[in-house]
Length: 180
Image: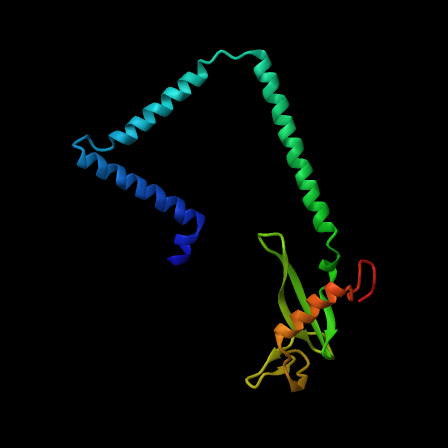
């Protein structure tokens, strides 16, 4: 329920219902007929539509509107191209696996709402068959495919993530076209 109330749909529907309820309560308190405020809003919108339909248009208004629309679309296309170029210039997005602290690691990149990237799905790979490893109850790594068992504890994920980010900051990762 909390998730629904924090979503855009929940907020939109909740606000609408709250507004409707407050309008009905206002009508009851002021001794007006129920829904008179909503009826007045609907009439005002109808009058606005009728006024817009009866407006005498000039040809130069239409031409100016078309030119402005084309300019807006060109600006939007230019901004979109800049964002795409910015994303394609981010060379570290192909850096998705490496050998760190004696283990092979794999991960993915996810772009956040603010445009920054962060690591997701970071996990160690089996040194024999490259299958994602899992931890047992004692924090040892086990391969579900070939049953390889590590004799060391699982490294700290936070430390591995810091090493990956440091590799990017130092440029110590394979660039486009280089073999990993």
